Image 1 (spheres, rainbow, N blue to C red):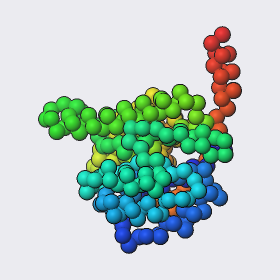
Image 2: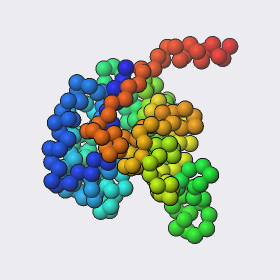
Image 3: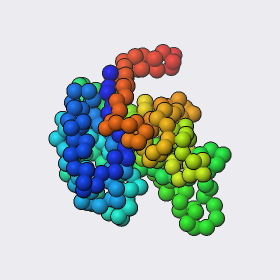
Length: 255
């Protein structure tokens, strides 16, 4: 069994140093990796990123992260990313990474994602240039996620996880005002996840949302924003994929 620790929206600032470190230091006892689902800082400054870095460095488990909208606020996401990478984190945007723990190969594909809304109530790529760019940006994020998940599938990972900040489904937004759903996620992310395949999707962003959801294709979605889970992290369990059984089933189906 693969043990996934995840949290988002920790919003650390200069006065938060050491806040999560005691809990994070227990991770080697209960988890195989830590996922950080964006909004790690308050305003996206390198100084705040260094606070996060000291919380996560040398934890004894791999750390995989995406940035959130707060981490972009100061217009220095590359600097924030560099600080977190120097601390040993895999920071993803339209890429995937494979970490190994206990002999299991765990593939994580990540993007911040963006808004736009959900089927039947979503923005369209029409009209003013700024509206078209809004939707195109969301689509680019989703395309990067899909491509990364597909590549991880080709690498024979024991589990594949989609890590985003914005939500792929409306289920996990329940509790938020309906009026702001279009700014909390996009159905394009769910389409990417269902097209490429994943064992779990993890996101943050919706502080007043709900933890549990699912894509239309049956992929479990979990909102791990810290105000939702109410703890330093939550643990999710994934079975290790039996590659021999999968190949045998495929061979049988091909007969």
